[in-house]
Length: 248
Image (cartoon, rainbow, N blue to C red; front, side, top):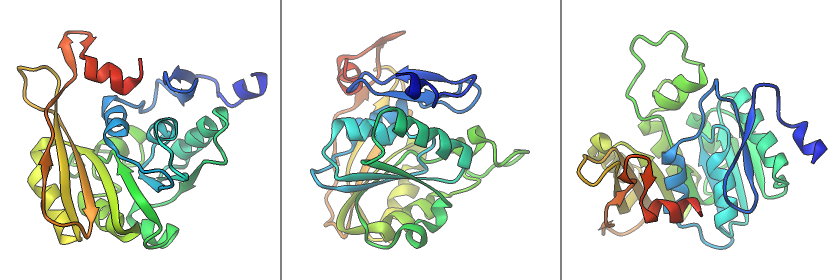
């Protein structure tokens, strides 16, 4: 335990993930994981033996949750910012998962060059949602990179996802509903067929603020729309579905 605590730097904390006793190292002054990453880990259908790539892995939340929930053979995280990648590596080591998960520092726009073409059966990504970065002064700030398309556009994400996937491989994205048409067009342009989607609503009487999407490289046209996912029964109280995803 003492050796494990040495992996946590001053100012950081370890959040309990409620899965397998795992924790994740977080810095409250930097970008911490949110509901979207947790929902994506529950939406992704990873098959036993799959090699999985998480594009733009940040501090590694999706990797660790997928390792806890699935029987993937190996999971790789690709992250542009070395300080975020370092935190992800320390979380992987903290949980004793270094033989199952590796973190690569590199530009997601060149994922296929860095990692190889057709090397993964599944890709996950919780990408930046906001278009461009007008008025932003620091495009290397972790919070800016996580939220705005300053380092990777939607087009970059879909192109590189298609390149690293095997034929028949699946991708799983969480994004914003207002970009849904653009997402579907880009997926089809790069040979990924949208196969499944689910809209996420903060409350039953509010508009959706997230969408979960599954695509298959080289898949046949047929889209399944799953029943809406509602986050809160009332302010501060999750629905049963959310508790199931979290693992409580």
